[in-house]
Amino acid sequence: MILTQWLVLVPFRLVWAVSPNDVPIHEAQQPLKNDVLAIGPDSLLATDIEQRPYSGRDSSSKDPSSLLALHKALVSIPSTSGSENAIALFLQRYLQSHNLTVELQPVGPLIPIKHGREQRNKQRYNVFAYPPRHRQTPLLLTSHIDTVPPHIPYSVRGDGEIWGRGTVDAKACIATQLVAYAQLVASGEIEASEASFLFVSGEEIGGDGMSVANELDLEWETVIFGEPTELKLASGHKGLMMLKIKAEGKGGHSGYPELAESAVDMLLPALLKLKKQELEEEGLRLPSSDKYGNSTVNIGLVRAGVAANVIAQTAEAEIGIRIAAGDPQLVKDMVLETVKSVNEKLQVEFSHAAEYGPVDIDADVPGFERMTVNYGTDIPNLKGRHKRYLYGPGSILVAHSDHEHLNVQDLYNAVEGYKKLIRHALGQRDRLV
Image (cartoon, rainbow, N blue to C red; front, side, top):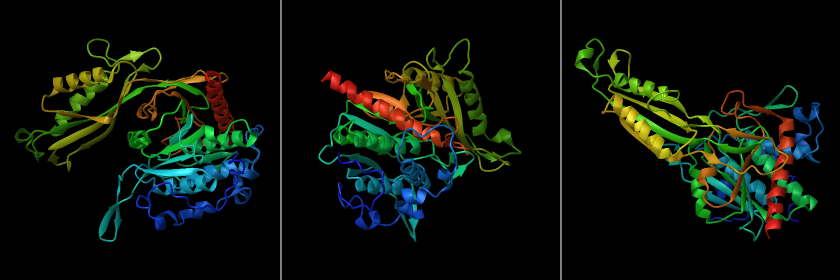
């Protein structure tokens, strides 16, 4: 039982599971900002959140300060997409200190970082952890370490509300997955060798981290994905398609529009017609289903022009379509037909990194409420024939917002929920054997 003491943060010892060329030793040993490695149960016991009364009884943890300490440490580290380096190194140290073998899998740089006169790309990593000598396990618990911008510092408000970027999406999942597994190992209900962990970069920007994780060349019988599901078991989520529409016109003085061609005037009618397809009763209409409802179109970003007195020479829009039914190719054909029917000069570029239809998910575990969700996940990015579950604390309705938060009781309840899922996954395996 190698994890019986792992809820206590102890000094770490580096055990390299990757090449030193991938992560320079001096970089890995540098202390993180805010001294998050110094956060431990003793220091957390004196914080505001432990001093406040809670509604309900803490039945999920004999040492609640350890769960809150880990959650606080994770949220306190800024990790917007492209800047996941610091949190990956923190998790490496934390997991190694609890006797897990850790591999940092390079994902590739995304954001250029200035160092003096030079520009250097900051490396990004997936964090893959497993019990020593048990790289292949029947169960994988996974979530993502990146968040949407901007970083919002950790804070405690009201009666046990925890605020900050990533408190819900998805650092609550990471903390509660780790604690749930540790408690099951400590109690002797499962063997430490039965599960591993994968915490990936880039989920919020198309899933490049999970795509790279396929190169681990491993297969699991069951994978539990962590995302905010309000402590319900998700039975599926909509598909996703990301695209750009570009217009190239002819610039000129706004006082002489007859001598120019506005790229904005070219683009807008196509956007309006595409939005109309959400509810079009006749002709082209994006697909719908009883399970997922209507497909929806979001015009998320529009760029055009240089000034109000200059006719825009270029314009482009970035669009996300949540697919409720059908094959992505059908939706792609409809988009192309719609756009080209407005103006043949418009260019359409589809992102192949984010293109998939509705995703059905296993939801056969007793004792959970069930739901479908409209957001995308890394589930379709991880290849394999495994059973897949989607579960986590908090609501997606506050994620990505300036008021992202959850109640501390959600963390305790999520520990119990993950324990139930782990027991089911490994129990089902025993019956199959």
